[in-house]
Image (cartoon, rainbow, N blue to C red; front, top):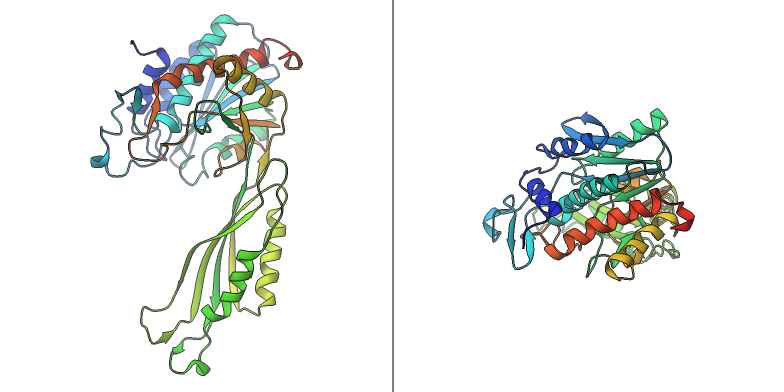
Length: 383
């Protein structure tokens, strides 16, 4: 079967080895497609990161397609069945780094807009694209930079669809209407180094910290809510000692992370951790890093439009979920009241032999187009 327009564009994007934070010309290729449709395209660069803000129209409501052109490193290319940046079709699948995360989504968005504008050149509102090459990396010079700029200009966004791979088993079975926040701590518990045979002359930070760590692990931080599971606290790294078996270490280092819901705040979690550590009488330093606040889009106009489009295209009933890691939706949610993530199945993302089933490519594009039709051609209340 002849590959579709969306599949061919996906393959063109996969062939560009845009390992984060590089874009490798992806956004330039997309600009060449969007500009003839009437999009005003603006490249925003920051510390080697390439961002694209492209907008068609000036009226409200403003519908934004958001995503990232960067991909994670491939891992050992020798372990791939085909070269990671040579898009390869076999057994009904399209293989290549970025096939699921998220070059297919970007291609589907662009072709959906091409079809929508051709059918509805005088559509309501405005359509925009917010693309970055810094989502898989630190995410400090990407979407957040564009959102800050839009906020300074007073540009508002009404709806945003992020093309993250959210589907679980089949296309459309799950969308994300929010994400948990991420709060990390780097804890250093101070002791006194000494000979292991003379513990009275030393102070073992491992022994001192163990009860506090046990209490932190057992703590119920909140009960979650209708959309979020309870907040979780997990240790990711723990280290102490010189490597010698006869030395009590002088300090213990613990890295931990909260994935927290809207039922808690970063400030409340920090205060409770310090209270536990203080109660155990520890001598410690603790540095915090807040990677993102939780965000939530309750059921409403955008989720209804996407779920309705999925049902119309595939006959699939969609689950709203807030599971998984963080995404750039956390930045967009600051300036947009309705942010939903929807894209391909995520079972192969970041893996060797990343792929997407070819049968999902055009339905994904159709769902994106149907969503635009529901929101920008008839009043949302009637969608």
